[in-house]
Image (tube, rainbow, N blue to C red):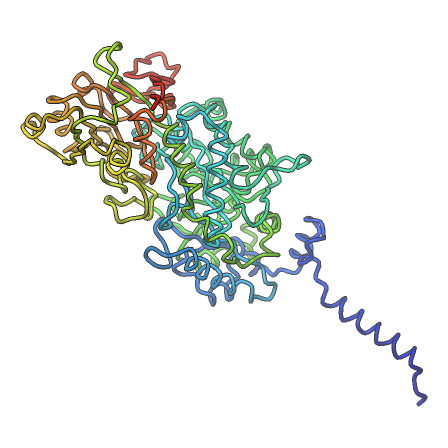
Amino acid sequence: MGRLSKPMMGFMLLCCLAVLTEAEYIKYKDPKQPLGARMKDLMKRMTLEEKIGQMVQIERSVATPDVMKQYFIGSVLSGGGSVPAPKASAETWINAVNEIQKGSLSTRLGIPMIYGIDAVHGHNNVYNATIFPHNVGLGVTRDPQLVKKIGEATALEVRATGIPYVFAPCIAVCRDPRWGRCYESYSEDPKIVQSMTEIIPGLQGELPAKSRKGIPFVAGKQKVAACAKHFVGDGGTTKGIDENNTVISLNGLLSIHMPAYYNSISKGVATVMVSYSSWNGKKMHANRDLVTGFLKDKLKFKGFVISDWQGIDRITSPPHLNYSYSVEAGVGAGIDMIMIPYNFTEFIDDLTYQVKNNIIPMSRIDDAVKRILRVKFVMGIFENPLADFSLVNQLGSKEHRELAREAVRKSLVLLKNGKSADKPLLPLPKKTAKILVAGSHADNLGNQCGGWTITWQGLGGNDLTIGTTILNAVKNTVDPTTQVVYNENPDAEFVKSNKFSFAIVVVGEPTYAEMYGDSFNLSIPEPGPSTIHNVCGAVKCVVVVISGRPVVIQPYLANLDALVAAWLPGTEGQGVADLLFGDFGFSGKLAHTWFKTVDQLPMNVGDPHYDPLFPFGFGLTTKPTKN
């Protein structure tokens, strides 16, 4: 056998290297390849098991690296209050998320999982995050650019903890304040809700100029995928009962509850979450005409559709009564990712059986998986699946807290100022002998933040996170010579005998979320009314109402000198004092009608029986005092 010449050997070596390189080159892993080519390449490599895994979202508490690897799980979430440790730091969050991600990356194809969390008014599950006012207050600002900046700040704080996906914004149009989620709605007016979808480019980044309609967009490692929710009609249920039936014509649905979805899709929103509610008796989680026919086909939405928490279980009543039917109805309707969140093997087994037996067509599975992969590719998590610590200093940063304080200032509505127009009480003087601060919500950070803060239902008290209560804000603002006396619920004798210059009474609703907030009486619980009576009967007073919606206030109105709707302002209570003492002027206008009595409800601007205590758009203004 003759020896090969050196050039020949070199040539063969090069050929071998080329073959090896060719074998190692995987198209879907190449960010230079077009999106369509990457998706197509990855899809053709996937087994049914791997595809179904992508459609599954499970709770953090059951998402071990082994589970991720064994079942090819596509997504993980933190439910309300689900945290890796109490008061966990950004670093602790990152390590926990990365640990789960490593399980996904160790699978045959290495498809990264996407981690989602409810960041509905800032990064609200996380200790020390900036908690912004709830949407009910932000709608009052009529300021889409402010809301966009809040989206940008929220994205940075969420990414600071290693998370790339948020279940926000809620673009419900709350038509009845008895609904326990009304504070998640910017307004009863669809036009205001539409304008507030500007939070989406804040969260995701500005859509490139030549983008095709409906294609999701997320601009890199400092942005997050957003989720427009809850599709559709969640704010219009009968009597405001959560998860109830929205009885309205197609025309009504399209003109009131749908418009903000048009804006969200045109801004490149990555995902849409389906509502628990029904439309004219049909569960939205099983409504193929609206989820597939309207959202996907007519509106050309190309991101993925996600269920709500155990949303397909609730297609039946009671929930989980006939799970295989729920799987068929939910996936068949066009839901791409199922928020299970715990019992995932049952879902995987049922869906696998249904595909293998042609109950659900393979084309439906492929549609779901393509959409999920599209979002993952667009987000860049194939290139950057693991988070680093470069953004940890963004969590609760000074800049974000200043932005939240500005949002508080712009979200307050001045409803009454003085017993007569020529004798306004506000702005209050900073320099005076002695003032009283009273009420259950004056020194209670948790009540000030509301539900969806640290835990699902929210937490009363001052130990939940870092922030400034309204009492401390008052103390920070007044002249050093002014004596501030705090008494949560004083009797009338105490008030009379103390010779106060004036009083600030802060009362309102306890914390709640979802159905636990449904209320048929909308009254401020005791001791709120007693405190108003005792204090305002004895001294000039301003009442500040902390609530997730308009509440019954008419019985007290004549006795108080000034009334401020402060909604759920979040951690930066200093914004309230900024207005009370005239560092800034009141500018907010009601975005929800303030009723006289609950018997009038539902009552929205434009209704024939419209007879409000304070109409939609109402809000007195003040000028800042010159120091």
